[in-house]
Picture 1 (tube, rainbow, N blue to C red):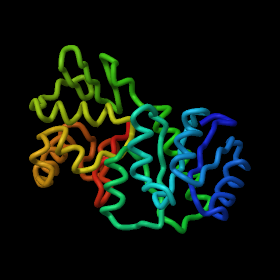
Picture 2 (picture 1 turned 135 degrees about the vertical axis):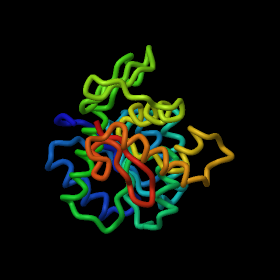
Picture 3 (picture 1 turned 90 degrees about the horizontal axis):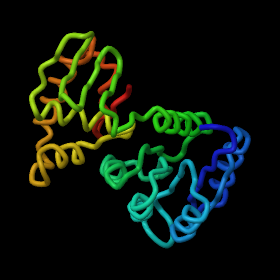
Picture 4 (picture 1 turned 180 degrees about the vertical axis):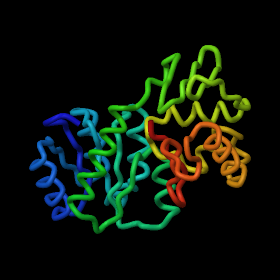
Length: 229
């Protein structure tokens, strides 16, 4: 993220908002502030941010509703800042369209690291319309449906190929178990996580140099998976 990029901080607690604003401004970000979901959506429409930091516990509406409304017209990365630490809350926010989740209380160093990581993933996100995608020693030719690793063709089943396309088109966002199951097997199979683990394992064996220590198809414990180029 370049200097003076705009970050929208959506938080109803003034002290936390000030704490985050000072840290961001000291690191050359321009900051917009909103204390309600309504104000956040209005600000984002009027002055589109490069990134949104969003609390889930807003006074006028739940943060997940704000995520869904933003995602109707904005692809700006969204990092959740919330005291809600349950796995279910995290999964729900990620399913709604958030990119990352930071649990309160948090330190400035961790906050800035998350902001930089999300910004970097967005900047390095592959062009999902590209005919050829490369990562590591893997080359995917979407026109011919050919995958090679180190120049050698790799046989993928149709479902493995669809899963790989889902990964490379994700822009580094966490793909929750539910999202992947729905995308690959349909809405009636969102609880079939064992199938998901099997196919992810197959992809790792075929594409990762060390499947036991993957560099590209990473596990986000309790949440899902993340693809890193």
